[in-house]
Image 1 (cartoon, rainbow, N blue to C red):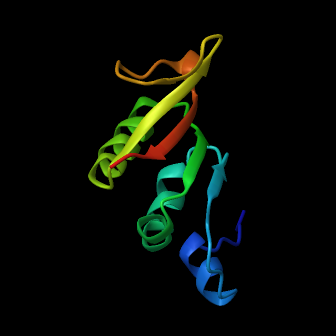
Image 2 (cartoon, one colour):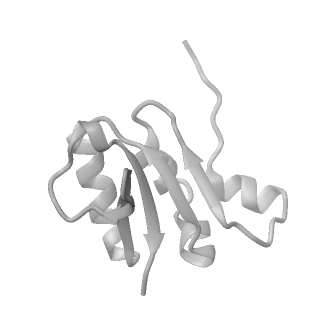
Length: 101
């Protein structure tokens, strides 16, 4: 099966968009690739990024990349939004990336 795709950066450029506040990614394991395809826009606009992550390898790659961009990872629980300071857990797979310089 062939699936057409377009990068976040290309969407921003082709539509001459001047603002990007929020990105939601739920693309079954391709979240890291989507982030790579939006790096220019992410660096420029520093949006809040909501993503679902089900695999440790994806989480590790995303965390490493986004740490370089001064983003922190958060998760939701009954107490609200908490920084993820421990190892990845499958039951906390709905995550938020937030720029924090």
